[in-house]
Length: 434
View 1 (tube, helix red, strand yellow):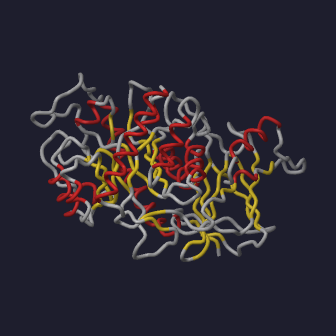
View 2: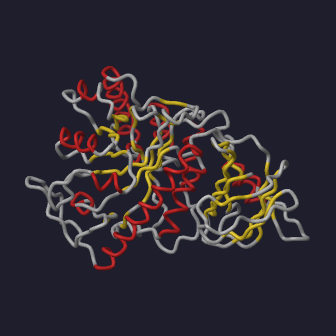
View 3: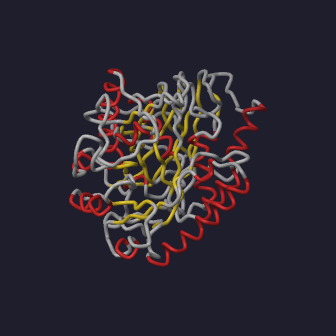
């Protein structure tokens, strides 16, 4: 989506500017078509070097786990769980033996993002091919006080330069909140400019029922802004919701919600996905119940672990949703791995149009991204609302056939320059165009 597109979308919505064809009830939604990355999708290699062109041997789409732990609270582990679940990278929990973490990652083929490296650690990590990058600070823009924000930003920049002095080739960045509105916006933009890539979280499923992703500071809006502020030259990594927090009314997404969340991030510019979080003593200390193939009602923290307060315990329903979420993550990780060459390829310049029919919570419920993948064009389609609508896709140079990538059902028939299809609430489609 072009610069200022969300302002234009808001203006169009307020003015009732969507054109409606009185004959068939369809309304044209030009804002549905995302156009970022036509000159190349910014991403990295396994060692964090930024690229704009896709190369099968060099390009890397991180599928990560945030707060990865060798010991989740039940005894030592070896990260084999992450590899078997389709993860290729890990943001390890800082409060553990990092030497052991790195070796466990190496044994399981996982790249590591080093969080807040010490001066003693930097010389070693600078030469380790296992390192993907460095995370400094955390959620800095969640602090609105101008004096605190300015001091924190200067400290971040100073530390970033110190890390670059040891390792000038890997990205240094922060994981930020979705705080893109005043009084946080200027700070958010400054960190996005300072870092080598933009990584942010946005957990859209809270205060049920959720009717649309287009809430204030929405996932589509934050991801689009990340691509815009970097002039489409920095990788954008999205930290996705895989937890429930009764403290903040976040609820565990179901499979449909998790899938639309991931694809909404990708359609609006994400070139990496990081899941937050695995269930563990660390998540429970933070009043969060994460995803796990074997969650526990309570966890026993490693010896010497100091807890800030009483951790939350999981009910039986929490254990069920935790296991289900882990299985969902496994399936979505497999889809992301399959689509990585497509996502990291340039966005197509091919002209097409999207129109919708039906009531929807937001004025533009369908969002699309057309990629010139290595094996031909692929169209990603996302319904960002919890309303079923009918979508019409019309191409100036229409394809001859549509092949669903992950759906066993036959593709829709092409007629009149395109096709029409019913897209269910939170629906996702991935089409290969022939």
